[in-house]
Amino acid sequence: MTARPDDSAAEFDCLVFIGRFQPPHLGHLAVIREALRQARQVIVLVGSAWQARSLRNPWRYEERLRMLRSAFEEEENARLKVVPLLDALYNNDVWVRDVQRKVRDIASPEHARLPRIGLIGASRGQSSYYLALFPQWESVSVPLVEGISASRIRDRLFRSAASAEDYLSTHATHDLPPGVVARIRTFLEESTYGQLVEEQHLLDQYRQAWAQAPYPPIFVTVNAVVVQSGHVLLVRRTAAPGKGLYALPGGFISPHERLMDACLRELRERVRLKVPEAVLKGSLRGQRLFDEPHRSWRGRTLAEAFYFALRPEQQLPQLKPVKGGDHARWVPLADLDPESLFEDHFFIIQDFLGLPADFGGR
Image (cartoon, rainbow, N blue to C red; front, side, top):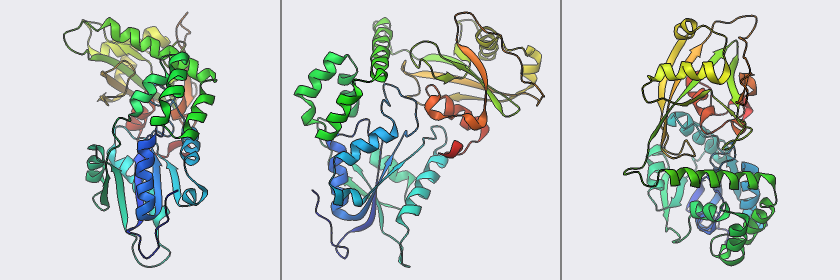
């Protein structure tokens, strides 16, 4: 248990720690315990809070919240404020504003004196990146706990059930607190775990196919953001990765194809959208490259997205089902849910439509 600092001796009123905690490990706990030692209150901001499950983000916010809470005593938890953050991958200003607002609302003093706020993190370079985004807060660096990596932990867990059990039985105590180990064991019994293992196998096959390439491959894809009368056109994926999730219509470009032509072809082939090509071209309102390095499970994948704003009509354009393909439908903007959208597709829509970080009541 971390000793509570005397109010008059505490160096900070509040320390802020930002991370994804996929999963929370002993390195994370070392940072939080140091924050509890130095500050009266600690705010833990959990990133990627409403992302769809993936190999990079396998646990939902509520699951990570329970994992984090399980690692601390009651008195420590009383000084911990754990808050979710919705990413804004392509707009740092939106994300920074969300962080600032959350910290301001939690750390507002009950008296006139301005609170002393700091940003705490392990000295890995990421903390200096955050410091550049929040120059109004002091920076507190904590030594990195060597040998612990969330990505390596996930790699051990999602190879197979046998690999996961071997890791949890032999090595997990060096990386994870007991409460997190217990919750991961429960997670291994859920159907979601099996789907992620399947995606890991697909990813391994994908990487093997390119193993002999002289350079790491960079893929180029297109996506269509088609909006009409408060609805956006989406397809529900019928196969892994992302089976059951909604996605923007799109796919890989052909070798001798221009980007716009590839996008229009995907709309014809994937959703059979009953809108003349000339009307689509006349409805184009934006075009942008989306290049977040971790945006796709395949590896480095660039997506050129086209935003089509169709004229409002009494009826939405018809969609003809494609045999054996993904299922297309018009989704009301109010029903968009980041947890149900594939890869970064929510953020692509967010970027074109100017949706706020807390869109949908988040």
